Image (tube, rainbow, N blue to C red; front, side, top):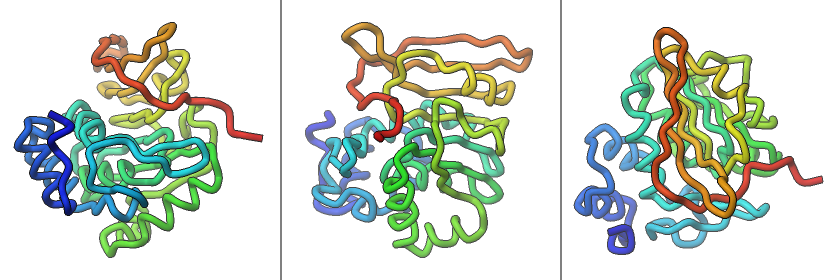
Length: 222
């Protein structure tokens, strides 16, 4: 149904995603309605497809952002702390911040410094984004996301927006108990989303989900 979900406006895109069953939760729909994708995707913002943002990076298709939010939703409560690894354009980082306000905090980690600057510029295009940044509810940092961001840990939820070659232990260590990590992982010539849950007693489980195709989670370009 993804190919039928594009729209001429942000509202039509989100409505079509919901109509086609790609958004099922009202909170996710409301958050995505509140973040205009045109502020983050410069070419075809309301198509349900990935778009290039430069620096060998992409902004994922809207239905993938919806899937990530719905998978993490039980942990995206007001006041929650969230880490977004590979924040790129800043779009999903902003959506996640909408889902944990008031009182929540989202850190977007990006290893390409021009993309950190892009995320800040994009988020500040809207009054809502400026408010989140000025209040400390959302910020972007330049760092190796494979190492997480210990300064604000532990996190209720962690999203990884690029394909990892391993289950990076620092990210699991920085999860709260309970907490959830959503990440694509390379397995040979394929990639799958993995849902990693840390239970209250600290035990960790992994569940393989859908097959995907993400850009790799790599070292910063030299």
